[in-house]
Length: 221
Image (cartoon, rainbow, N blue to C red; front, side):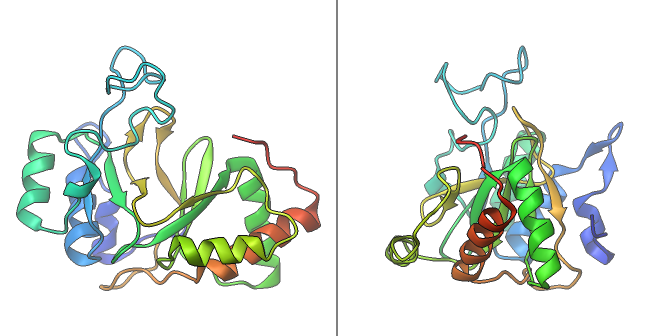
């Protein structure tokens, strides 16, 4: 994994008995990169596979907004400080779309093979998020109409691909969720501006081609 230099080191800094300082990461996303964020619901302390929300069958434990709701996502420094001062271990949830990146995600094993294939072609990728089960490739914001046209033009699209666009969300590093800690598989390069991300067309085209060429059958989850 690429090293985050300069002020970006604080994204991976560890304090309080080795725990990541989540508030520093949340402030970087919101105030430096202008990505709207909000605190997510935490996993059930009695069982990380269960969520702290009222839904007993929640499929993304500890990795989604609940109270406040997604529409509360903000880049306001005072609000971000207040949230994480009161909830220091809350996951950092990114509201995708608008001024923030969107993403394309797929199961971890298939994603690792796809990224290896893309590296061999020399394709430039942006940051990649990873959990134990899925990886997400960050891309420029796209509309549902744009995505629909892109997918309609393809003969085959793996059913395990998921698309996080306007109205969606993702957990950001170093959040702890029911699937474990969210980390950077490909960390943002150092700099003061928000990380560069590619177009969704380039990523979907490359991922589908890589999965097809390598014979990877991504599981449906």
